[in-house]
Length: 104
Image 1 (cartoon, helix red, strand yellow):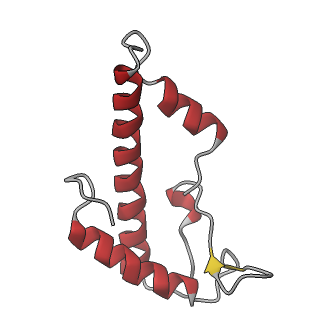
Image 2 (tube, one colour):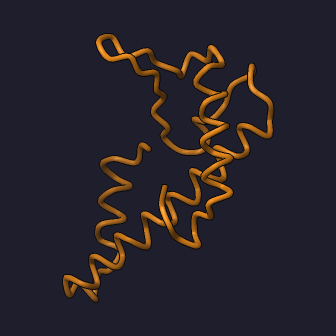
């Protein structure tokens, strides 16, 4: 759990419930790890959060969580850049992350 006004506790709780439902949905996006006892799904943008077997409100909770996590990530990366004295390019890390690895 994270503590930030960008990602309220209620949203985190709803997202955890929604993720559990999504991971048990039988969606082709859900992967069973071959050697570990875990089930996961890589999310690459809100468009990747879809499944015809899951209620719309569950998917909406996941999409809302995804957007909130991205906002928190962007603010954190911005603060790191400013803290490093990158005032002329404070969005450097956010752009770099978007270009090279935007999966959650």
